Length: 238
Image (cartoon, rainbow, N blue to C red; front, side):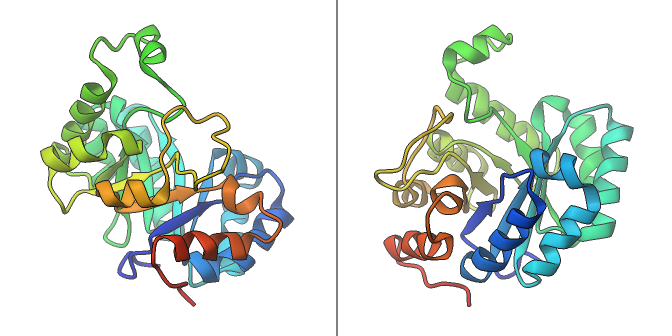
């Protein structure tokens, strides 16, 4: 599916259980209009698992969140394989892979998919990035990586809500910001360090929100998704 419908919430189907992922996709996909599949699921079920989710929610846009990070030729091959088979709305790589890698990935992406760069994972804080060797303050490191991704031709970045305003100021309004670490009021933060409510993130300029456990962990996931949409004044897709 193309990104023309511009869904607001990509629901993260973070599970190694194929039947559960299909059930969530069928239930949540028509509400949010968009789903995210990550490494846990794809490593368990591979391309056949992605196809199963697409078949369960054929009208939902898909974000395949595999965070590729390798030498340029290897990443280009991986991106090409995914895009040729599935044409996801979004796919991502790590900005830390550098300009040459990101450019090769973008060249391999095709016209139906947008390519994002991961900046700094939302599970990391200032102390954690210093331990891995980044010397800049966390917001500055994120914006440096976002600008590098934009200069490399990518369509946007994955970033925490805390850096939205700085990236918007530096990269402009056409640069897509896919924002995980979103927690509705009252939800547990779990392993996320840099979180924000949907209303706050959108107010700062997020393009799309990634929300997983507050939806999939609810007794009624479809209703939980609709409640979040209602809280930000958006209607369901279907």
